[in-house]
Amino acid sequence: MTEIEEIAEIVDKDDLALVKQMQDGRAQIVAEIKKVIIGQEAIIDELLIALFAGGHCLVTGVPGLAKTLLIKTVADILQVNFSRIQFTPDLMPADVVGSEVVEEKDGQRSLKFVKGPIFTNILLADEINRTPPKTQSSLLEAMEERQVTAAGVTHPMAKPFFVLATQNPIELEGTYPLPEAQLDRFMFKIELGYLSEEDEVTVVGNTTQTNDTALSHPLSGADILEFQRIARQVPAAEAVIRYAVRLVHASRPQNPEAPGFVKDWVSWGAGIRASQNLILAGKVRALLLGRYNVSFSDVRALAPSVLRHRIILNFHAEAERITTDEVIRRLLDAVPAPKSEL
Image (cartoon, rainbow, N blue to C red):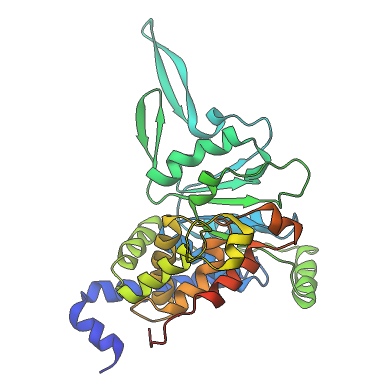
């Protein structure tokens, strides 16, 4: 009996059909994205994993790598509401979440809350680190609790709700570091690199001629919500969960059992959200790869994007030019997966 047949005996047939729809939807979205974006296949896959898992995503890279175009294209493909906020040094929290205005009706004046652009399904927070931390933090409640509180009144967010943010490298002029609490709200931090020579030739050729690309819309917001529901039903063995937790624990220098390089180079390690995100994103990855259980390989594959913004390096690491990706690579070597078929 195959794995699919075993699963079919215990899972509702409608749910199995939903898994097939998720896999087909992912393939359709990738095909549409490739009409606009050249290369970056691994980046696209992780972005879709975050969407199907209900997580927020931070995309980092130098200007000109199509960070904004990638996110806007994903939003255009999905049948959902979309807002874009260009984060600038003079942006205020009220410009993001909204504010109260005086409304006069029948000779009576009252305060009315006017919702800001954050009340949408997909929010593109473009160049989020070009605005001061005060404005960056206006996203905290919405990202974690899916609500905004203004003047003592709680306003729920639309469903689904995703923050897809772009960020320039912190070394660039006019940037502010994101607060650690803000970073922790993002499921993934994805880093865009330069394209290969062949891909760059294709991009230059496509973008310097007339090109009117029409995109189809294979999935709706309701479909995304169903994918989030079915992903949480994927089983995760205790051994896999324990491995994810051990990996996160090993990133904390306060842990007596942490590797020596962590104690030497890390100020703060990842928190519990990292363990949660490793397993939840691993469930989505497993489904998209045609499996019905999370494996150690899922955890290891997603570890860089889940951990790189949650590990804070100290000045010793900076002096030795050690990066968080180097620390994560060593962590994966120091905490090997148990020998198992999982």
